[in-house]
Structure formats: C-alpha cells, structure tokens
Image 1 (cartoon, helix red, strand yellow):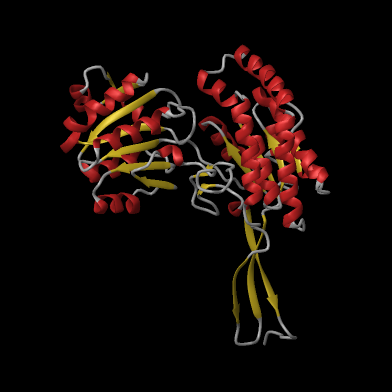
Image 2 (cartoon, rainbow, N blue to C red):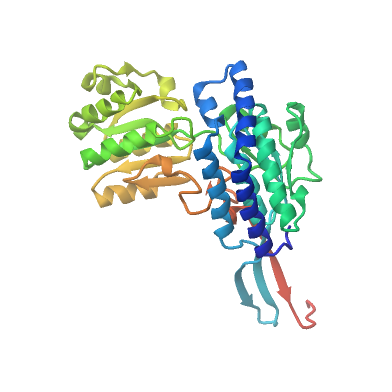
Length: 398
C-alpha cells in the first residue's frame, strides 16, 4: 500500500463509493438486523441513532469516500529539504504509519471513513467495530474490498475482525509485532480501557466535554442559533455542546431567550443558582454535571465572570476537545482562541463543526485531544509520519 500510486487508491475509493450505493438494500437489511440486536441489549436512544443507517446516511458515506479520493496524496510529500556544508542533501518525506488498528463503538460510518482514510494514506487497517454494528460493518468492508480488488490493490489492506468476542480486542492490543498504531473511537470507558491496556501507541480522545461561552458582547440571535445547533443538531456526537457558559454581565439579556429556544426544542437544562434564578424552568445542577458528557438532550448552564471565568471553567472541567465563544468583541475572541487549550476552538460557530469532513478532510478517524503526533480531526495527513532521506557522494564522517 505504501507503493500504491495515487490513481489506483483513488480508483479504489470511487469504486467503493459506487458499491455502497449499488448495495444499499443489503447494507440497510444488515443494519436492521444490527438494530434489533442493539434493542435487545437495551442500548440508549443516542447509541441507536449512531447505529442507524438510512438512504441519506448511506449517501453521506458514499460521498465521504468520494471526497477522500479528491484529496491530495499525503504519501511521498517532501516536507522540507536542506543541504549540509559537507555536501549531504537531506529531505524529510511523509510515509504511512503502517498497520493501524481501529477500535470503535457501533457507528457504521466509522467503518467506511476509517477504511477510506487508511486506504488513501497508504496504510493497512484492522477494524474492530462494536458488536451491535457487526453485520453492517461487514457489508461496508465488502464494498471497500471490492473497490481495492477492482483497482488491483490488496484486498486484505482493509480487514474487519471477524468475531463479536470481546477477547479479540485484548488480543489486538497485544499485537505489537503486527500493528503500529491503535486508534480507539468511542465512549470514555472504551477509550480508557484501550489506553490502559494497549501495548501499542494510541491516538485517542477520552470524551467531548464541549462548551459554548456567550460573552457580554454576543449578538442575541447568533447566540440562540449557535447554542441550539451546538447542543441539539445531533446530541450523540462528540462535538455536541455539554455546557453553556454565560457572562454574568449580560445573563439577564442573553440567557432567558436562549434557554427558551432550547426548552422549546426539548432540551433539559441544569443550571447553577444564578441561571436557575433567571430561568425558573431550569433544574438545579450538581457538581457532577460540569464534568458529564450527556450525549443526550441535556445541557448544563453556568454564569461566569466574563472571559476569565469562562477560561477558568473550561480549564477545570473541559476535556481539551472543542470549545466555542460567541462575541462581537474581536479582542475577547482572540483571547479565547489563544488561551483555551483545546484541540479545536471556534469563534461565532457551532461546536458541531468539530468534524474532519467539515474541515475539508473528507472524513476523520476521530478527534485527537492528545499532544503527540496528531491533534484535532485525524485525517489522511495525520495518518502519516515521516522519514529522512539523505543523499551523498561518498562522504564519510571524520
């Protein structure tokens, strides 16, 4: 796969997208079977929503593969070059990471996104999806394999662990001879387990404790629209807002209409004393609410003392994932963007833009909140590292 030309990789991705469309009935049939299995296991509504595929979501999967095909080839890029006084010519060139093991929960789109991104970046991938998505993921992997075969690339560069047995995960985490990187994508317990038990380096994030801060200089209509979208567009994604912070100076103007909009859309609000005073319909928040990733129609609300209070709250309770400020004050916005130490920070935009596709990456394997190798959306570029190529004409070191 490292030697595969761009044209062959792109052909495989485009053919895989075509296979997804032409096999939509079989994929949805498999998905219905998985949904029934998941319901029997009493999965939450949020997890069932992540698992469910329909024609629109399948089209999004196919379009995502086509977008990945349109991206530049990240392999073989000369990142920098320089000459040494002794005549050596040194280049730093991008190369694939190798074999990537991806462990994720019941989100079939991850099967296609991860397989496609690894294919494009010249990596081999071993996929281990949640047991509830077993049949759906199997159908999607078959589409990827057909694309690889048609492009004369090795089908086994995309593999799905062929069992629901949980011991397979433990085994994968010990395969240091065969796997170069492990990427866990899912809930806090899954990621924590992988990070604790893996003998292989990981790229991961624990949870998405995302915040929206409404500054005193926020436009009211924008504040309502951004907050509503950040929380309610899809509540089960890691970029969904979990806490709303409001500047005390403007809380009496901003919070009641923003809260009313959220309540009208079925969101449960849990606030501190000040927030509950302004919005009597609000439930009283506990200390645990500030560090809870609800992944549901629940939002904690807190009044803070301006930008200082917002930054301090995010520093204490945030997960370094995604945080947004709504303000018309450019100086306050720049301070938030520079001082909030999260992988993604936004000004006047919804946290739900925390997505590789929205960043123009075609798709993503996940949002990394670590500080080594990759941070933020993990796309094709982040699935490469580099090596040094040194060219000489007979130099020997004195």
